[in-house]
Length: 145
Image (cartoon, rainbow, N blue to C red; front, side, top):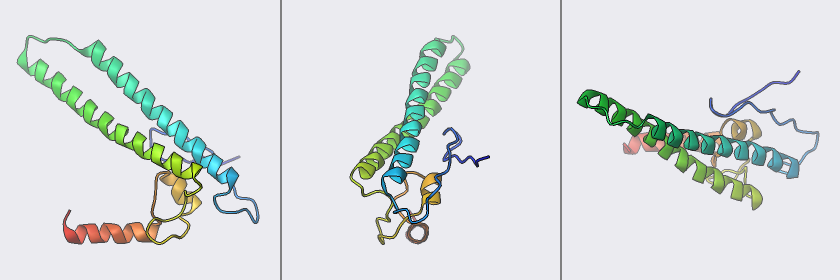
């Protein structure tokens, strides 16, 4: 019986990668594993965009009551903001897929060490190891951004 993991609540569970003894970090099988995860995630996000468009078309109504109209506009506004975040995430997924293709995926942008399989399964678009990410967040808090 295998353990299941997921990167986000919207991402379907996937089989965690099982390394073989002596396997090279980010070799072909590992890159294929992350490519599959990212492509599945991107597909789910794109389906969500399509559902939002369909929902907004179906639900669009010209309510005579200003409060009803305002409620609908607020709902649509929230949906559009969520889709905008997802659009940005899709771009980040595409960038990550390119890194995999270029065989530059899986190493920290800041220090160059392996990010690690479990961290990448938890956040497939991660570009920093845990230590560098923690330092970056501390610096960000200190600067007050």
